Amino acid sequence: MTGTVFLSAFTTKVAVYALARGYPGTELLVYIGAAMTCFPIFFAVIENDLRRVLAYSLINQVGFMVVGIGIGTALAINGAIAHAFNDVIFKGLLFMSMGAVLQMTGRINGSDLGGLYKTMPKTTILCIVGAASISAFPLFSGFVSKSMVMSAALENGYDWIWLMLLFASAGVFHHAGIKIPYFAFFAHDSGIRASDPPKNMLIAMFIAACLCIGIGVYPSALYSLLPYDTGYNPYDATHVLAQTQLLFFSALAFVWLNLKGLYPPELRSVVLDADWLYRRMFPTVIQKVGKVIYKMDNTIRRAFITRLDKRLDNLAQRHERLSGLLSRNYPVGSMVMWVAVILATYLFLSFLR
Image (cartoon, rainbow, N blue to C red):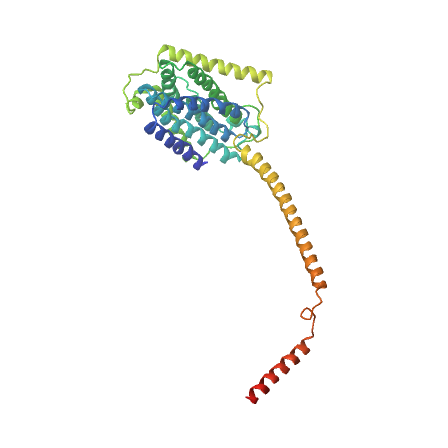
């Protein structure tokens, strides 16, 4: 899990940095980013492996950054950069909390976990802080950066994109803000009684949680590091009210779906997305192509052997028809005798000279 934390924090953000430096204001990125925010939600809701749920949410959050870069205004670029910075912290916190669960229990599937809040209370609280941050709760870091991208989308006439981002915000609250802590630490009691992880892991998660809260409470410290001074105030009454309503109704929908038994349960299964290509399509294609090649090879071999047999038969028949003097078979001994006779004749004639 250590490698996962570093990769989630740095590799994806290097790509965001490259886009921000090289392609700000490229409108195509707006639509690519909007698609990135929405499509992982459907996979994350039915995914059982909680690490893969976080990986889907990573795609979702990078989509917000790509939209901001595509819009290209000062506010949008600030929002993309700020959200990239915040995502390093709260996504790292969530990955670390799931890493702690994996280390202490040996399990990471939602269907195998539950009830861990009883014996892992510190990890539970720290994970909830990360979940609140990625869900953009007011007073947490995700709120002060994600709202900048959404405001920039509205200001520049991307109304449909704003609606997609709104849907994506509700979706990420479902699968990362609620699903991760709920199925890992609450839900059904799995009977696992694991303790909190070692102190060094708790300290790392505690630092990340403090930064999530600190940036959310005092965003001007982060805004002072951004490339543009836009004078943006995230705690405008409209922003706070809209985001609070969104989170409230998303939570209400989650509770209602669970009570009605309509929310997808955590099943012991593997959800195929892009890995369908190498798990299903490539083996099937290779198998079918192999069968075709095998049949072609057999056909060509049979045709070649058949023609070769015919040629050999023709040669044998022609050889049998030849009855001349030179075509007869002579024993080796008689051939040696005739060579000796010819040599003796040659020597005799040479002496006569």
